[in-house]
Image 1 (cartoon, rainbow over the protein chains, first blue to last red):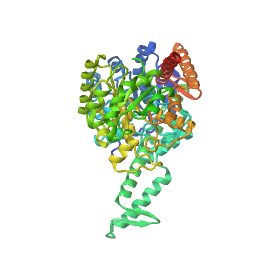
Image 2: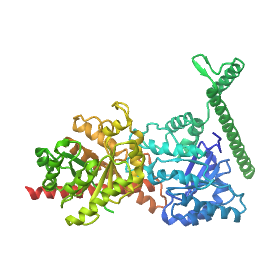
Image 3: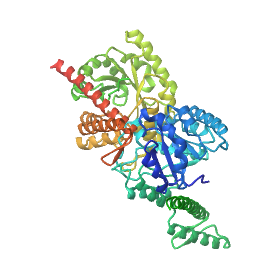
Image 4: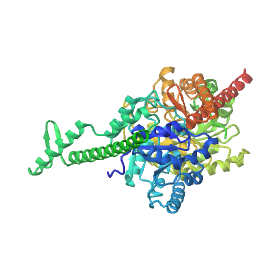
Length: 316
Length: 306
């Protein structure tokens, strides 16, 4: 699986809450998702739009990518306000039809051209939050090459659509998540999903839960995180990054596999483990992902250091 | 659109006069007179002749009345079933949209013939085969009469060639597909949590309530009840509890205050309250009101009988 970007952690925040926006760069996120949708009250939508252009460089100065979540019902006004240099992705909530995605693509294409942004830069995140969205997933992903990953089909909106309570202790969304994963893999975009980890509290700020969820997701081959509370950023970064032990193990597997190459066998057993080309491929995948994560950590650390140096210079 | 409240649908073998005469006493939201699996092949004709009178009998407590027909003799069964007082037909073993369209057309003809409002009779679809589960989308959208859909898990097991083990649910995919596709088509998915759909056992009311509650949290909107003991715990499981209603009223208040103060995301008891949570609260409150209205309707009917 080709990995598009490293997006282990990210905070979704109302762009109208200045305190959140001003501190976003300090949080260590891989991305920041500036929200125009559910966390912004209706009477503040216009004001919120006016804040995005300045917020983009502000929240990204610690090395995070910048996304914006727009409103399902105001796509033109929202896109006009947000497609500026520095924006990586538009998150479109409650995606239900391919035609919606084509419309977004058309507007984004025009704005990229008008505003000197390299064509195709801005991705579309098609958020699946309804049964209709799951049912039409294939046409949604097929609608635009800007859709680079796909998943969802769980969470509050989905639970409302199905009429189920959240946090009941069993996986209510297994079919929808499975459908989305199959669609993503069939159409060769990244899959964005999470395995079921029992959670009956619904806490958005529990670091231990966040770590368990991230680690379980990584072990199932998923790499996308994100949340609402700064307390989950570090645990998500950690949970989605292969541990030192995982990296050591991957090197060991590859070494054993190299020794197998000359033997004429296709597999062998070492210390109760089967070493074969599947294990070797998994090990290479782990090492590749670990190195992408390390690179991302380095880039963010450098960005933060630059900001801090500039701040020190400013105060002295 | 008014919320359809059909939490419990009690199946009654029409050839058992005792069951038919007592059915109205169990407080089911709907009662389905069965011409299919619970009637011997040799008694099908006799069974059909009983429907007209039974409709009035089982409907006296304000339950909606349905008839489950036989797939091979849909025509004769529907002809014997469409009388004033009938709310619709339960169609078993559906595999294609054509079957639904054909049944809908039969209903239109009979509605005209017997002086019922055209289009008033509903369809409840039962899927009993892999083909039916696969074709669910075209089946549910074949007629606007379709209001509910469920799996017949015993027949489905036969079709799949499996003997289901109670500890491993073989219908995770089928039931998940049911919940998603039915919701997408604005049809209510119905069913009980596995393995109760395949293992007819008598459970305590508490266990039944738990199984029905789990079914609700898998997206089901009601349960087809093979035994009167299911009705009360099922009704209870699909009615929002007083605690849930109180909590969601609080959610609405807290969220309204947040909006007034300029934010649409506010913590409450460690959870984040935002638009979807508020929207969900509205659903719970509306559901509570609709359940109360339905219960009052049934209570009024019983009071008239007393």
